[in-house]
Length: 206
Length: 67
Image (tube, rainbow over all chains, first blue to last red; front, top):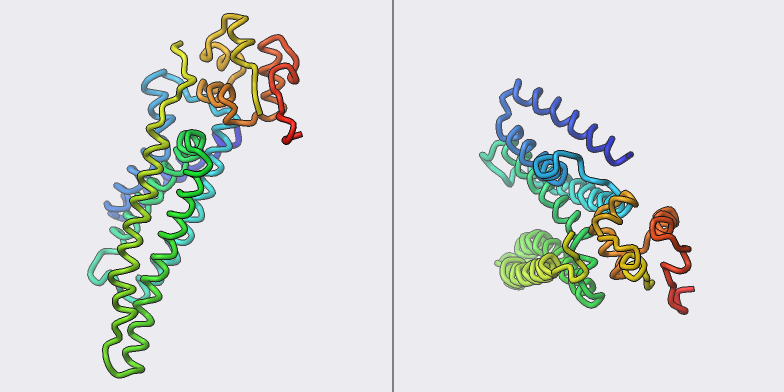
């Protein structure tokens, strides 16, 4: 019941936000919020369209929603800090801030859906070994992202200190870490899709 | 944890859908419970046991190392 109220409160705040942003002509953010709401409420919308009723929110769904919200909250927090830093150093030169915020909102919605399906479908269908590999791939991807940022800073620092172009951090930040990042993300996607596609062998026809 | 839900459900001639409706959960929850991939709360376990007309200990069996 608490989850349902959170969803209703979220929808109410979103509608108010949309009206406010529409009045300020921030079209990108409005589009992103609409996509975000559709992503977040896809279960409810699908159930209303197909069965003409709200889906049952049982204890397993509540646990899944809580897990997905935790992941989304953590992602939103980290993404906001990174975005603020990038905006502070003027990395997105010439790009409208509303477009950047829109991108963040859509990605947050995507992370929520991915997180929800991870708890709902993927994790129960995967073996313990596959879950461990998924964690390893995710941690590796996170480390690679940090390495890229660190290598860029260190490359500039070392180059300024030595007086000539540093090669080690350049290769690490622009070749090695991105390559490992792509491999680990592909690994994550492969394991996730494998779990998602695993059929429910216990399903009986109603 | 092992369950004998399928066995008791078959005895009563209930489908997963029907049992889910009686207990007030989603069908997927019944599927995961039957496959032993979800540990229910005491409240849900009690509800399922009542719906199947048996005791909790008859339906849900903990392995020795989990006790």
